[in-house]
Image (cartoon, rainbow, N blue to C red; front, top):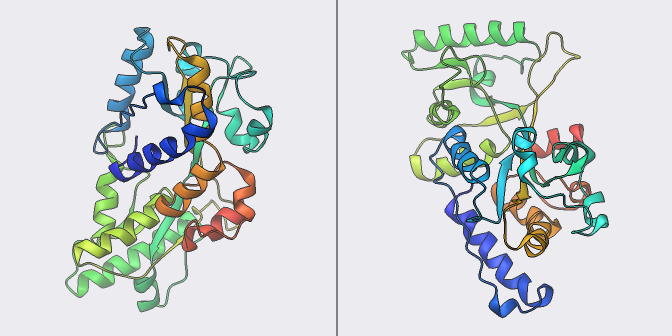
Length: 293
């Protein structure tokens, strides 16, 4: 799933790349279909399921959540021998493992993801509190600041959002991000691109506050863990153009595209070398990236 701005980037890059890399490129037309950005991931998966389980040739390749490989891997072609093996080696092994089904490479990583915690830097400073590194510290800090803020008339502030919501099975995490962007959440569990989303929201909402980003708390201050997320792209077995599609996704998941998407949209690359380049993925999340990769 991608925004209109992202889809425009994909299309412009493909049109620039095709002449020097595809035979008879004049006869090739790229038609990229992007799910509405407001759709839930579960709604998007219904489209994937209908197309692949129905063995439709309407679409040649699909963007897939990394956890769907086991579910839809049998419907995707094996990419070994269809793309450059050196291209594959550039990606992180951890991300590549999410692309494998029955030992075969069924997709390529587009970008990576992991849970992070955003925090209201201004409120921590206001009440002389440090960034919590354990769940107990987070609970104590959140309770104290919420109590103090309520005394000053701020009854909208929530302590922590994004992880253990009662409505977890149906809760749209974009709701918690919206509350965060309005300044109504003290600590938020979200994804790295939420940093850029927050900064962008400041430009249009009239709301602004200082915030920081850090790893998720743990049982003690030596522990922290986050589930690996991210999205991959795989070629449908029912595509009429499997070789051509393989070349296209090799480019879409390549260095140039990942670098631009990292800079513009805060999406984490899966290509290891990009973490050693002088590029600003996003200053506040870059600190965490270095620790993880």
